[in-house]
Length: 88
Length: 137
Image (tube, each protein chain N blue to C red):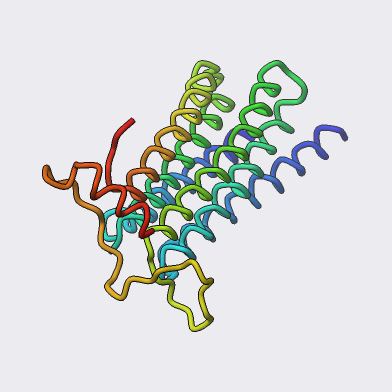
């Protein structure tokens, strides 16, 4: 069963590199935002799988903080796209 | 017997999740405009992450750790849906035309030029410019 989780981890890692193509060569700003958002969600899944298969429970707590930071930063970036100004 | 059923469920859940992730990234590469790319990105987030975390929960049986993963699953579902909605609203208010022939709603002010990333210049930081942008979009 550990081999199976390793295969899933490798598939997700390869997916990250596929999506990074859109982040590097996206014609518009929202494309880059979407691509980076997708890569960071994949990183969150990788953290949970890592915590489960390697018995490293600490990275589960890291995943919590990462998810909350993801929400806040994306709202701020969307505000920047809408108004063009980054004031908090 | 119970182990066999459990393993089969885990394999099915994680395989479906990985399939959704692959489909989402293919859509992100091949779809034409940011609206449809947002659609494929949100599908990738919710379905893929949901199924894979569900597989981890089933494999872990009922622990304190699996409870943590369950809370994280609910958090991911709420967060990703809200993120996609906020970004799509920002793109819509900025006036980006999607590649479609159907008519757009009334309040939409299209820009004939392609969507240009907003730049911050020192002179444009005054309130006048930003309020104009808000009113236009």
